[in-house]
Length: 302
Figure 1: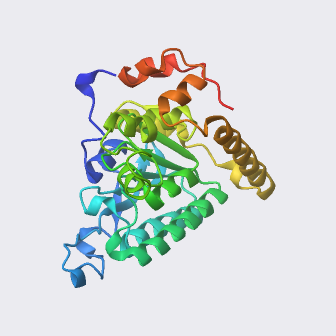
Figure 2: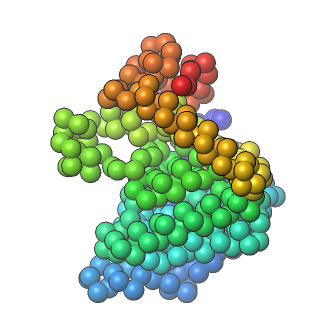
């Protein structure tokens, strides 16, 4: 893809990402700003509110496939999930289970739960997880797209791993606890949040792809995310049958256990990449996406 033609996913806001991903004029927003579905809690805390509560949800088409889509606005409270924000995501996923579109796209841009609404936000995360799994059980693929400034942390990091497919760019990040949180709790010796290269080698898209926590890695281009999302819109048939879903879950658990045993002593992505048999792992952060994928095509996973 020509660099001149790229539209950066990282630099776009929620509405620009949706507009770039979906077919022209196909998006219909649910509970848009005119409905003023705002958090009931923020004003009581003298905090600014947003008319869409920091998340855009609706329906549209992606290359003629019907999709429901949600995009978090990372510039509003770091994309934090509160009561209304979470309810909009849960409602969209429940709609997917009932209507069975070709897929659901979750454009994640969040630091996790909104601390101003901590209890409501945590409950919302559990509801989003349940609704995600319910959509998958109905055969609807749920695709997480992560290439934003905030990445996907906290509860929404867990939601991402509940999805059928995770697609990331190098700029995206995915984790449970953020670097600053780890440093605060465990000390700088455990994780230096000021070492930005280390942060991306541990939470960034390249690393998550190499350890099979992201199934796709694309350049920072809305067009690239659109193509990868389109290819991921295959019926989630393994989740429909309970026995098949259990077998898949047990296989995943076995793989995670093996990787924890193999990589448990590693303190840097570089060490894990070396154990995967990748030649000269230190050069990987410098490679463009296509060259990176070629250089790591023969990596081994426990």
